[in-house]
Length: 490
Image (cartoon, rainbow, N blue to C red; front, side, top):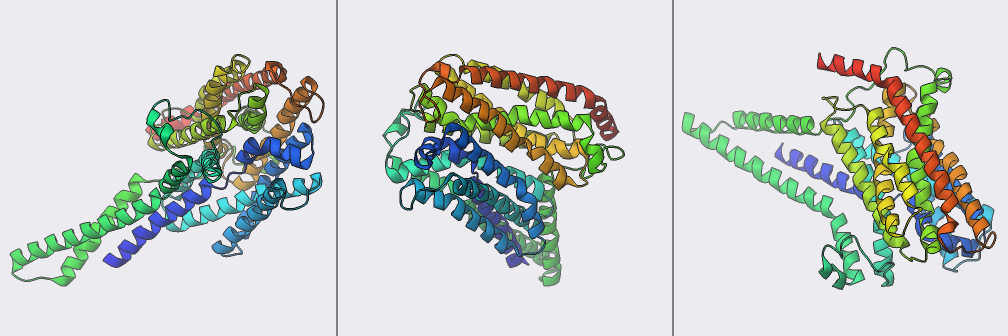
């Protein structure tokens, strides 16, 4: 029994490490933030066409239901294999093209490759869900949501690894160097090594936890044996084994209670009314308000991230990689903190998710309008938009099932996610058109604050509209959340 328990705990922690690494390296959105100018140069495309490539990648993510359906027919390893092949082909071919190792691709070829690359993350996410479900049956939702937050670190991971391999530094500043100046003397390759070691922490924890469990079990077994010997003068192996089983069972139950599920209500907040068919859902005013809040909030933050390289170039800053690291890090903390807050307050009903959405939406238009000011505000706004967008992605995914029920949840979530490619198409198109009008045509480079002045005003107004809609949605659902809080309290 002891060996089985040891293998179980070791396997669980190793699985957690694998899920974390897969999530941390499978976020395609950061590719465009770092490679926008390279794609424009090598594909000979305009700013509007580059935005269409971004939309293609986001469209590929809408076909996540295919991988979900395939998971019922194929083994887990095949789901991972398909995701890795899609990602390797989608990103690898483009990488060879940009590095001039293969002939140039046409725009339509690049479009199809980005759809394939975007869809690869769906297969990898499905595989991670399967692993979490099989190894953490009682808390798989919490485990998956926590590990999925590491996708927000993809920008930082990719930037650091590329700089370490190439031996170049993308920016003159760091999040770290002003606080710890000695870190500036650390070589870029050593930084990449430190980052790689940090990613192995879950595996180290797995080994240490398994060793600690083994030591605790042997110690407990020894104490029980000694007590039985003192009481009866002889050892009773069957009784000792039974007590060890009880102790292990109690420990496992305590772990399960401590790592319980985030969503205790599987049927949605409004069991009687809102868990209706798709036709009623599409005629629901609250649903479309929720849809627009998603488009005007976190989706707008993603569009800003995709334009980050061109924004820094227009201001002659050359700090795109550093700003990408800021957005990546703050997005990660926004996601992880929102999950922790929800998990610790899931039984207390401290604040409803629509109300929390309002609080997170309020700073976003302010951050966008601050972009009209100096370059210093660019760092502040990037941090705010990264934090709020990351937190809203997590909260809104929870709110979907709360407001509209868990019946046909995949279809409902897919409809909500269509706001991302549509928002990217609209908001990105506005940015590209305004940039081209201020620059020298389709392929020209614009320098100066005026390049994105109109865009920031439009984006800020859209984000402000989303904030108003989130407040109205909170008012429309306030009574229903109050009823839930009252029933939980009783």
